[in-house]
Image (cartoon, rainbow, N blue to C red):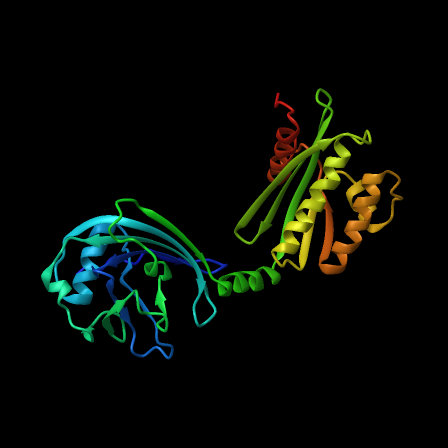
Length: 312
């Protein structure tokens, strides 16, 4: 018996799983499992979490033996599945599964419907699901319905359920995001650049870009664009509180209306910031430039790289 712990861990945003799935197919029928104590009836692939220090093929053999009582031979890996979902308790999951087929085995192919296993706290029931006649049956993963199990190619599937997106957005709402912003200017190609980094819990988002210096604003248009970029990203993530750490005072004064915006790009910045401030709580923290603050140094490099300024 393998007593190693499962490859799963909890984060502030949700839970991560690394699992293996097994495709036991007889033509277009696939052996799947369900928990009889679940209120909602649905079927899922034979398999389970990989244990720490265990190869995925060893995990396949172990899971099949636990769920069917039969020792199998692994054939090949046929699919990679990145699955983002929330369970019935509302916990967001980020799960990566590797799916394998098995070498033909008469004992497996003749397992009867209703075979009972001792796997899991409540046991499981196995059933052969006809993939060509399962419109009224809920199965996970859904790509089983369209997948060619005989293909020699490894297929890659990504599933993002609405429940995952909603729960992660709800979690983001409760946090104060921190953003570092900066601008730069390249006198050779007359382009300004911006760099920004948005920190939401353990998640990080880097943003950068450049534009033509039409108003002779030099790096200042990069500074304002960086702030607008992080505000837009924060809004998309559902953030309600945003702390902007900047090194050029204009981004705060124009946003708060304590400086008069005279140029078209500063006027546009002031107008947009008024709208963003209606949708989330925004605070400004001044940080001194080039004194070794990690976030500020990071966005400085992003801004310079965006407009082509070479580091000395």
